[in-house]
Image (cartoon, rainbow, N blue to C red; front, side):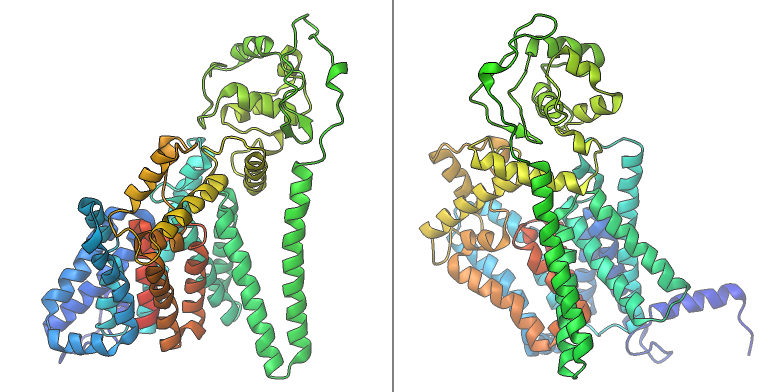
Length: 542
């Protein structure tokens, strides 16, 4: 028997990486081998496409679908699918969208929605009727997915370092930052499982560093939702470990973990409370009648006693001289005073808020104190000197606090993600109350929101008149209470029926997805629908 060359050995090793659950030997039909390799290539394509390319994602899904059709064995596949009740339930959620077309007036929009959510049908159908993967094949697909996710973070980090990003949300180049953050969160916990369940080694150190990078990047991109996800899932895992320890009569270990759970919960709450009071201290005690009326240059201050907004406890309307601000600002900046900053907000508004946060008078003397770093921060649209860096999780917290405070004071909500969501949810609940049973139909959701905004003369400008931005409410508007009930059933039944909900990988994925539904309409984009449908079916059926 001839010995294999080193190159042949490497090729053989690579081919073994993609071996099927039933070993492909010389007796395996060539057609079966080809279809299997195409199937694995499709999985890898989706894994790479999700974080990096919607185009590649669509092509990979098309390859999986065409390969499944050409593979034939329809009778066997039909029997396998019908017997697999969780797969049937998952596909029925997509069928519900098709039924929603029956009472849709905007058929074109409905078909767009149907096409966008095709992964909800494709992956349960194909994966439940395909042979399961070997563990090493699963690990390979997951590893390639995580490498693609990490590449997306490195590409964004490169742009940030080279100052090619104006808005921190642009740090996610290929897909929406909230979708990338979900994929990063999943990668963190998948890597964490390997580190915890294996002995200390070179690879466990590499994976630990990898986890640290992804966590760091979540903070850099200010993904508050993902950070909260990580925290909640960690606390849930601690609680599970504690309960498990107590059940096997390891009381001390169980109580210790419960103590960590309590400390984590209290610490997180304490940090949020501290941050709020740190950035929103009690306002200064000011008698506006006793304030100086003129600047050192003899110009009058424009004092607005009705403006009660503050930055770091200082009144925004106190000691403002627009004449001097405009003159001095235009001397130092290439962005005109009467234009917008790089985030699209009025320069004078950002400048006044920033100077107020520093406790400066908004006049020529105050502008002279601003450093080049301060000037750059204002041009970037940062309104508080505490956050003169584009990437800061504390800044994201501050934005949330400020938006809520501004909303309570009756301020403009346009462009503010948190308070606009409150308006979207209010509108969605109103629409559900008008069509409570089966909703407005698959294609009429966008139209229902638009009609409501127009008829009520909404305070939201055209560019911000969006849909529910919360998946349960989105389903409720389209399909009513019946739709919400079936949606929840489709989320719970498959994992419970297969008992995969009690396995680490599926539970982590399921938690990430479930948490995302409360703040995002995850299934209303191709990337979100693919993420859910792919990994849900991957962990359930393969």
